[in-house]
Length: 380
Image (tube, rainbow, N blue to C red; front, side, top):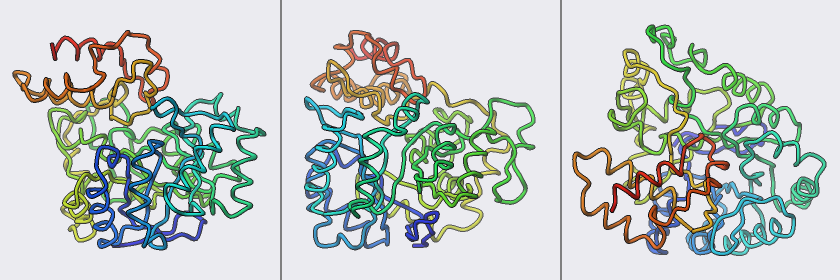
């Protein structure tokens, strides 16, 4: 495993990290197996944004005897209310959730205290000179968090955070689909001949974010590096061609300021498949040749199953419904197993009332209510 400096934090983090959110759907034994495989492979950075109590407890048990091997990105503002994830800046709820994170992870400090999910300008503005930010800074002064980070999907917010003077690193969504400009007939000019950071065609605001982070010593860790797995399937890829996990990882790791890619794992085999990156050849890493003749498309409006659409007033697992729907529409006929899985969910697309609250929280402008209606019709 190769390690990189995370900006000016002084932390040397593994190029391949561990995005732990998929552990929510696994029991303790599975969580322990994945965590131990990560440790075996030299992975030392874990992102824990999830507020669900069970997964926090399971992760805490899994790292109990190896806490010193891990740098943890723990999120401040991700709470569990009424059996659902809720993002909030309410100080009472924020404090209770963060203390719960420490307790369940069986630790007295978090390496990277993440200001959770800031995508809107009004949210960023509201944090400034607020009790919420005072609390975050108090945690750092006390050593309860060692560094202040922020998670966002919005490059404009990322730029402001990187220039703020108090945000030391950013968790940001990076992959070729998010970075490239919309369709063009001359895609060859969108790539440099070598794998440097000056690839043409990257959205200028995102390019500025990388540059600002690099110049200010603000490290980036990556979420959604695989775009929810869609980039691996030519039928679902916005480029019309498939990329490999190694190519996606290489793309992310060739961005300025990027130190680590947080990969989601379900099994130890998934961990081993990701760390193959460290021994891959340059030919295997070459994403540019794969994309050179492909049509380019914007990724706006595509669900990546991130879960930020929660909370749903009907407690629908929107991300899972969307995943099952996307899997189903790839088939000529809807597989009975997918229909059964959907209809077996405690709350599914049939329960959607079309309130649209989820759409206001979606980082990518997905028309969730419309997709729920289509899923409901498909899975009848």
